[in-house]
Length: 68
Ligand code: FES
Image (cartoon, rainbow, N blue to C red; front, side, top):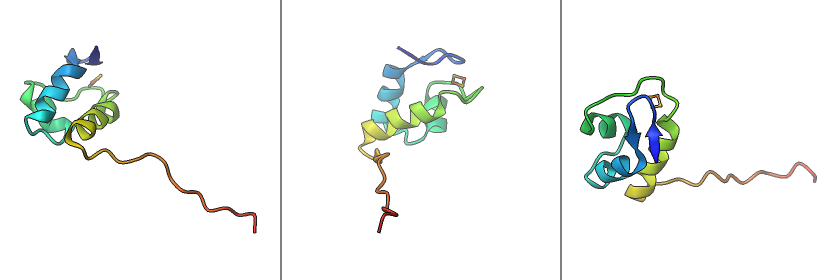
C-alpha cells in the first residue's frame, strides 16, 4: 500500500527502514532517497515507525470528570 503518494513510498518500505534503525520520518525518507513534500503522510508514517520500533504511544487520554 502506498503510504506517501508524493514519493510513491509504500508502508512496507517504511517498515523496512524503521527495522533498520530509522527513528523519524525524515530519517526513513532519507534512507529511501527522498524527503517529505506535502506532509500529508507524516503522522501516519511516524505511527508506522513507532509501531515497528515499539515506541508507539497510546492516543487514549484519561479525562477528568467535572461532575463532582
Ligand atoms: S504524501 Fe508524503 S509528502 Fe506528500
